Image (tube, rainbow, N blue to C red; front, side):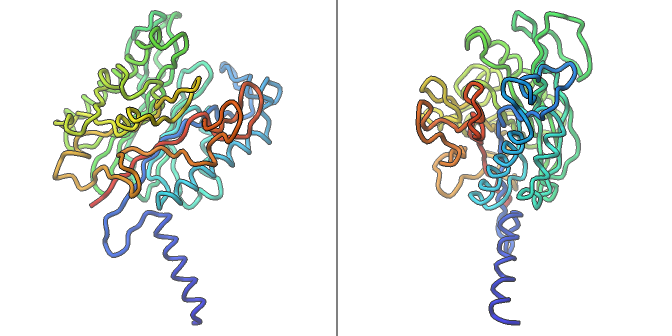
Length: 369
């Protein structure tokens, strides 16, 4: 065997370990966990009983195959570049603003993502535009056990109408339809994990007027976490999503109970928000009217930060003093004009920009000792 062949084989082995997240010599393994608001990943079809006509070839966005495949190519680039930056493809990715399972199948089949072998967890939500949340995961890291969709029911007065299972109909015509919360559970390196993926109600109508809707969504997630803790106190909980509120807002800090200091998490169901300090320092994942918001959060529970017996723990990156990470790379950023330094989005109004999303992706690291 020539020296050149040996070098090629060694290089291939190194790349395998980098992009699969495997470790050499029994070293601790580091797993990125990510969330990304895809900004209107619709297919090009007009789905019955769904208000998606805007995203069809004849709609105002002229959403045909060329633009759809450009969007897919952009998503591929985001996660591939993230894998280069973090050392491996994220073990779990929460996603929002996607229309259906079909577009997810297209995402996980993208050529540069095939080696991650992402599997899909998805339910259709009652949102009138048909946008859902979803979770994709690498089965080599996350051992999937089960999932369910948690319905968030809101009345026109912004209060919760009722809880219930997906598919139930309250018969209340005044109900506001919003996205369900996706709850998924399984194990990572033998430790139990519950993942929650959220896209809480928007600020349409004003932040204060709509606040109680996000508080209602937070309470649905909080109740599900509390219920799981009673039967599984040793489990780890990670909630991620576009919460349409910042870490300091009432829905996140009080109703969900995601605190800004690790020391405030003292029991299995207590939550810590790694993005709290980042927000207080002026960082954001989206911009509006020249001000930054950090709506995209990944929240973790006590066992990942303060339980000395946990094998899997929250970890920092090598070049960031914060526990949370915003993937705000230059290629994702508007370079000039009115929206300079904002996320480079797909559309401004109905003008196609060919960008990525109006949100930056966010991620955290887990370390398996």
